[in-house]
Image 1 (cartoon, rainbow, N blue to C red):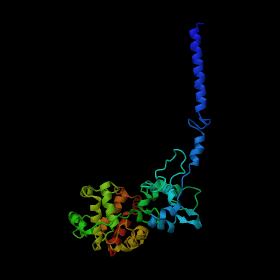
Image 2: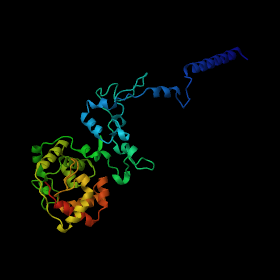
Image 3: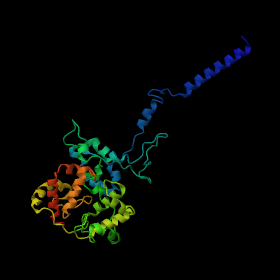
Image 4: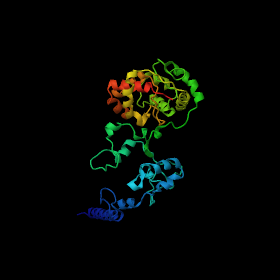
Length: 345
């Protein structure tokens, strides 16, 4: 064999030996133990534990929400029901950092100019504990998600920090300016009346209505939040959130006037049916919650039309759709008569 061939083969063998030796030297012993990475890294990452500050760490900056939680159903130590802030919002501080594993968005010390995570999908989160299923403790409130409220977010009805308190989560975030809202209301008089009382007009009475509810309804027309009306969508299209809040504040400041219409003979039957609505709308049609409307004094025709819209799906709200489908047209008329003749003050 020619000498140059022998030398070439020798170089190739030496290169192969060096490459193998380098691979052995630079490759961690646990490589590929659990797949294409170092097996030991699993233990290293696991030891990089989150640091939980406990609710005490949140109380200083979030006193109101901490107080709601402390008195609510999620803080009942005697019943073993403890859902702390960080269960939903994540660790309030960083991890015990090792190497380059500083991978928590809140920074080493919350808030450090940043914010904690705020769950966007409350249905997915709440049903981890509250979706109805066999074997789950009876003491733990269970709901059939599809029939309870459909795809509607839990926080549209329940206060996330005290779930048995209704409506607080969806109340208007800030009070509007009624004086500014009065100027905007001129465009609404054709359907709702000059003083928010639409006698014989196509729109509902707005005078004395809940400010939070009105602001939320206007925003729903603009943003496709379960309300559909070409006329209303066109009116709110050019409005800012501040405009809508001001308009809501104006109507909420006015004195209401009951419609006093509907079949008077149906009032008694409607009153019996109204017990099912009292949790949200109050026993006499006056809601105790800022985000839910008063029904007392509304025109009977408007109330019946709203129930039919929920029933046929043209108006979206999981809870109301379920409630409306359980009512016959006769029941709807009786209920409407009762609220139309109720005192709105």
